[in-house]
Image (cartoon, rainbow over all chains, first blue to last red; front, side):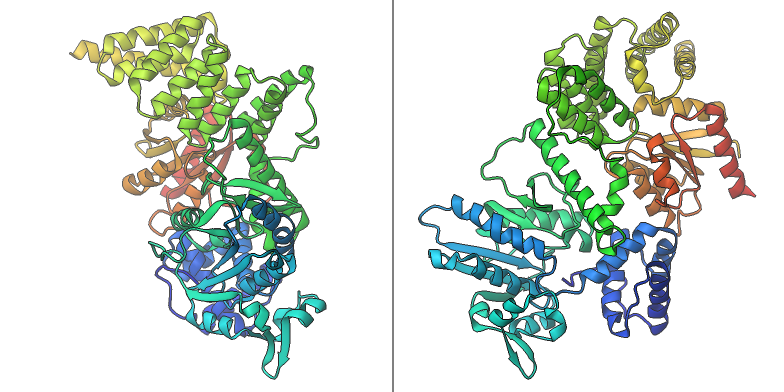
Length: 514
Length: 126
């Protein structure tokens, strides 16, 4: 793929090339030949665009202080190289798992199998797909095979259509495959007619909308590897949304082996086969239950952990490696082990600690294990609500908090959380009601008084606000610790007292001056 | 710089209020943001003298916010203090470098927070 935008599109000067080449060489040991100058330029433009940087100097600065960025760049540089059967395990999964599963879902009338290679560059990927389809034997079952390769580079497409490759591109290809699907010519190895007849190439820019009718809909499989690396976040979202629309229900999206769609879309089902991470368009529209959502996140997490372990020290796995620290240490015991009921308190503690330590996935994992033995754990749903709220997904947080409350209507913490979510989503009336109810169930819930005070104060009801702040202080003196303490973010109750006192004084002044 | 204006960013309104109380007690003016996107926008619009940035934020995490500001000529001189969870200490030590000027581990003592703020503001002034 060579799609990019941004303000740095000039050619690299020799000086700039050398500067980056030497830095990359020093830091990563990878030496870029002169012939890589264009590949480096494309990669630099892509990364600068991603950060909104306007000069290569700025990017060089970023590169020199940020090791993870160096890994991203190197990753991209190696991505630009395409070859046959690149990351061959993906094609094994296509042949052994994906194709049989999709065929099983097809009705009598559906007699074609269609794959789109989006961003196909010089054609290695679509041809590899065609070879894999031939190998799967589905043609003999009466299916018509179609592979479409698209790219924005017309020169790349010309080479793809020609289908003649230098020996170097064939390095990963087993000799029996070379013998079957390539024929030697004076110019290089040419793809056989059998393979070429399945593949069609078209110009298409993935970020240009709307997509032509010929590309929308009815694809069984789409390959768009490195989509999350090339584009800016917003463009990535649009591209992935368009690919989602283009897939048949039950169809699969293959992305790069070190990529994940976390934070980009949650429309796909995330699946793992033999360590390969794939995304499937749901067959019919079903709301994912929380347990399923957690499961898919956990699968994703495990496969990423696997990817980073496998590729230790290898630049190509930088994305996985970089994400790993956010997820905290891997658990030694597998979540699939059955949980004994007496383990539940310890698991809830673990979830609580993980939340406090900023490790949401670990918290979700503990929550899932609790729910496996006890579907009615209000606390587990409440922790799930916290994770979603931390993630900015307030609707999901609301649903989980409400679930917790339906199990334990007297949970002050759940009621208070509901209030916080309503507060964050600009629903002050609901928030006020929730904080009041929190106090009905726990008259010492200091933070509910404080928030009520703030709500009244924001509406200019200073006398009501004063009353709440006073109640907050009284509750605090009665009981300087409680269920509410977890919401303090580690700060001590005396600081909370100061906050209440200051607010009280300010409101009193307002009343006096009125 | 006692009249310095500080942007405090945390997704919990209660925590934010407490941070605000600490900073106000130190004589600073405080503006706030509750997620990463808002933090970025406020920083760009308001040009605060210093930013106190939580790591775990909805929409855009604190590391990203920090990087985006630190690699912008216009904003790079604003000191940024990151507030991180205990579990992230290791990650910081092993190289997630974002260009932040200082890292404080939560929970942070009010005195320590004020000292760090004063130190960073002095650096800019001096």
